[in-house]
Image (cartoon, helix red, strand yellow):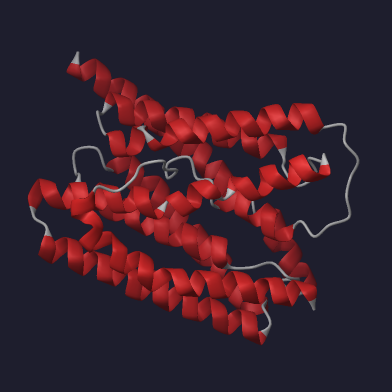
Length: 276
């Protein structure tokens, strides 16, 4: 039975890799437009920086859990490469203020934040406890990731228009969540399995809402921020509804405190740029 479960887990993990690979490539047309116009046109870098950080976390988790980590390492390694490429293109074509903000965010979140998390997990936890702490960190961090679709859903409900919520993307994100749920379930890794229940629920809600509102009129609003968030932050492997146990707060709270101000500043600055 164990061999059978391992085989099923590999099959679902492989399908999850394929689907997540396509989702990672979804923004290529956007960046081709950026390249052609030589301008980022109000797009923001926060979703890409957050996605890069999340991929780094899952690679670290997979390296610690060597028996099941291969398929997580492959897709998140690709995620690190493609997100780094997106960020590099953004920095090259972005205006000065957005470029400086992106570099600051990278240093704070991906260098300082990840470094703090690495040191804390290496020195404050050992063996199985270290893996448990890291699993919770991944899930708690990605509570902000899971919240991203709310921007899209709220806008669709308000405008009765689905022009900012592509059905194909919602479908593949939901399908990916299903694959990663079964991958984690068959491996009895609930840090992977449980969050994707939320991924399936939100994906299903998005598709139902699309069917209800698909005949609505188009609206002339700036779609770029919401479009980027929907393309990047709803990674099916990373969604979370889990609340951190109190004994792990010593590890997670410093990281959250360190990253929260810059994320807030980034959002405020980008809103100001769009209004200008």
